[in-house]
Length: 238
Ligand SMILES: *Cc1c(COP(=O)(O)O)cnc(C)c1O
Image (cartoon, rainbow, N blue to C red; front, side, top):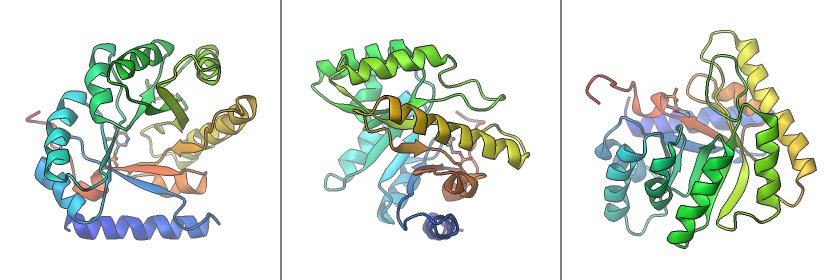
C-alpha cells in the first residue's frame, strides 16, 4: 500500500477509536514517525497533507528536515524529537524541532534553555515518563520530575513551554500491561495538572502502530505512528 493509502487508513482508524471512546472527533493528532525513512518518503507524506513528524536521531533529522523545510517554504511542517537526547545534541535539536518529547531529566531542561536562549526561540517540551517495566527511557524519579515541573512553573526556563507528557508502552503482547502503561500516564498527568495548575499539561503523547487504538481509549491526544505509514524500517544500512 502507498503512503497515501496508509495515511487514509490510519486516520480512519483514529476517527473510529475516538468515536468508540466517546472522545471529541479530531481530538487525537497524528504524528508520522519518519526515522530511517528517506526524504522522498517524507515529502510524499507532506504532499498528502501530513505536516507533523517525529524523529529520534538528531543527526538524521537535521539532514532530512533542513532539506524538507527548504523544499516546502509555505507549509507549516513540524518536527518533534522523540528519542533519547544526549546533552551534546540539544544545540542542533532545538534548531530543527518545535517540540522535544523526550525530556527525561532535569539537566536536559537546563541545556534546552541555554541553547534556545542563544537562538531566541521558545520550544515546546513533553516530560517523558517511565511507565512500563521493559522500557528504559523516561523520568524514573518522581522527585526529579517534581523538581522539573516546579522550576517550569516558577519561570526558571523562559524559553521552554511544557505541554504535557509522553510515554512508550512496553514492547510486549500482553494487552493488559500495555493498557496499564497508558492508564498510568493519564492518571499521573491528571494528578500533576492539579498540582501545577499554572501550566497547561494537557498533551498526552502515547500510542504507536501496534497499540494506538488502546492509547486513544486511555486518553491519548497524540499518536506516534511509523511502521503503519511508511512500512518496516531497514536498520541494516544505517
Ligand atoms: C519509532 C518510534 C515510534 C513509532 O513506532 P511504530 O511502531 O513504527 O509506529 C513511536 N515513538 C517512538 C518514541 C519511537 O521511537
